[in-house]
Image 1 (cartoon, helix red, strand yellow):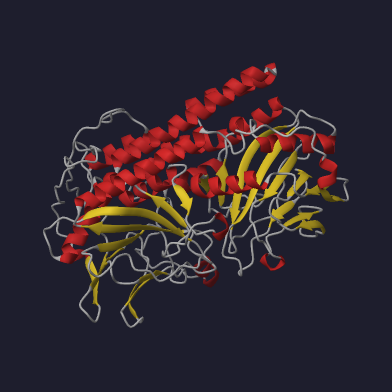
Image 2 (cartoon, rainbow, N blue to C red; image 1 turned 90 degrees about the horizontal axis):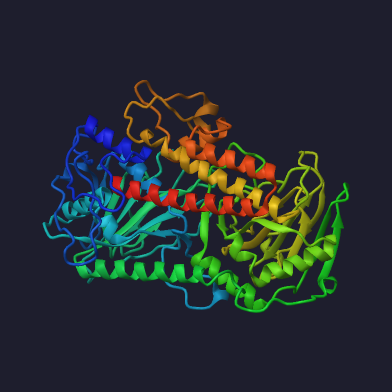
Length: 617
C-alpha cells in the first residue's frame, strides 16, 4: 500500500481530524494504490466518500478496473445460468474495516427466525438467524460496494449497471439449521453475491456455500476463504453450510442482491429508513408496561413455588404468575423486533464469564419506571425485608442449542446482590432443556443445589454470589431461549456506580479500538495469532514463507484490554478520576450525573467511530 493510502486510513481510525470534517465529507472517487494485490483497489488520501441522498442525483460512475482476471472458478447450470468465484478483489485491510463497521453499530443485528408464538406467517428464507440490514445506498457508494458491483457486471459481461437493493451482513453459527433458498425468480434479471469476511478459516471449519442445479444436485461449492466473493444468477438455489460443531465463533458473511432497477434500490433504502424510525419511536415510548399503573400490595408469598438453600445458606426462590401475560408478550416482541444486542463470540480468556454470545441491553432509567420493576421491588422486599434495591444491569439473554454457556457468579463475595430472572420462551416442554442450574461452588468438585425449568413467565430470584449457568435448549428446539435478567445492588448509589463501571468497560474498549486501527494498514504486521488446535496438537507448522493472519481491530483491542489494567486514553483517565471523586463524596445526584455523562460520551463515541468507518469504507 502506498504511503498516502496508509496515512489516510491510520488518521481516520485513530480519530485524527486531518482530512475529515464532522458534518460534511468532500466528494471523492476511487483510485488505485500499489500493493501486493496488483489489481485490488483502495482509497487515495485525497479522496473520500460523499454519502448522497437517495434520489436520482446518486452517482452512477462504475469502478474503472477489470476484475475478470480475479475469477478463480466458473460453473454453469444445465440451462446456462452462471456462477463465478472471485478471489483477492479487495485488500485485507478494507475487508477488516468493513467488518468492524458491521459490528460497531449497536442495534444493527436482529434475530430473524420466525417465532410462531408471536403470530404472523413465516416468510421463506435461507434461515440464517442473525442479520444486519445495511443501507443499500451507503453500500453502493462504498469501496466494497462498488468493487462487488463491478465483479457482478464483469461476471454478467455487461456495461449495464447493477444496483445493490438488499445488503445484509449475516452471522452463521454452529448448529444453525440453514435452508436451501432462491433469492429471485428466473424472470428477474438479478445477481446475488456472498463475500466471506472471517480473517481466518481452516479446512475442518466447514461453512461452505453450495449452489444447486434444477435436479437438486450440488452444482458448485465454494470454500469460505477470507475475502472470497461468489457471484451467481439469483434464480439458482443456494445453501449456506453452517460451521462445524468444533468451530465456536460465528461465520460472518456479506450477502448482497443486485438489480438493474435503480428505483428498486431507492425503494429499499426508503424502507430501511422507515424501519429505523419505527425502532426509535418504540424506544421513545419507554420500557414495556410504563404506560399502565403499577400494581400495589401484591401478595408475593402466594406466588412462591419453591425455595432452596445452598450449604452456605444462600437463597434461591421460584415464583409463578407474578407478571401480566400481556406485559411479557409485549416484552418478547420488543426484544425480537427492536433489541439492542451486544455480541461476543470470543469464548476465551475469561473462564468465569457466562459465555452468553447474544445479550440485549436495556436502559436502567427507562426500566425503573416500568411495571416490571415495581413488581420486582415488591418481590425483593418480601424476600429481604428491605426496599432500597436498585438495578445496575438490565438485559435479556438469547441462547440457542449449540451455545456453550459456563458456570459463573454475578457478583463478588463481599457484595450484597440479588439476580432476578424471568423466563420468556412460551410452550416449553420438559424435553426442550434450557434449565437454570445452581451449584454449590465454582470448583470442578461440585454439586447441584437445584435446577429450575424455564416455564413462561416464571421468576427466579437468587443471591448473585451463587454459582449458576443457563443451560442451552436441546437440539430438538430450534427456537431461542429468552431470559430477562435484572441484577440489583443494595442501594441506588452502589447500583449506579456498578452500572458506570460496566458501561466504562465497553467505553474503554471503544477507546482502545480507536488506537489499534493501524492493524488494518500494516502489510508487514509482526503480530501473529496462534494456529488452530489441530496444527498445535500435531506439531505441524506453516510452511516457510507463509505468514499467519494479522489481528483484526476487535481482536487487538480485546487482547490489549485483557493484558493492561488501564488505558492511557485521556478521556478514560478523566472519567476514572471523576468516579473516584464521586465515590469519595457519596453524593447520589453526582453519581447519577456522572453515569449520564458516561452514557452520552459512549453514544457519541460510537457515532464518531461509525462516522470514521463510513468515511473510510
